[in-house]
Amino acid sequence: MNQRSFDTQSLCRKSKKIDKKDDKSYWQQLENSANSKFGRIRGPKKIIDCFEKNKSFVYLVEDCDGKKKLIPDLVLEEKFPQFMIKYLEEIIQFN
Image (tube, rainbow, N blue to C red; front, side):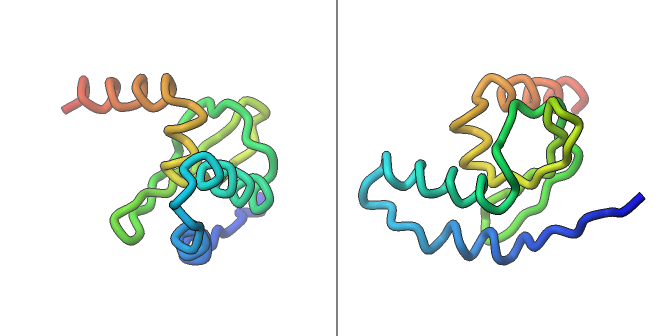
């Protein structure tokens, strides 16, 4: 099976360049950046892995179509807050 490698550094660099003055446009640009790089984001089924870069996180998730995508934490939290809450509750239960 062909394992795709993800360039987490370029994604994190790109997200840092976005102008945060206009909050709404910041989120839109960040989402567009993730969508253009990794395809349209569908509701994730599970988090496979997590990478830390510059005090921010990037998640490798499996979406509802079975495709693996790399999503910045800000996009994941904004688009799927319930998913993040459920995931964090599961982590807390195991600790």
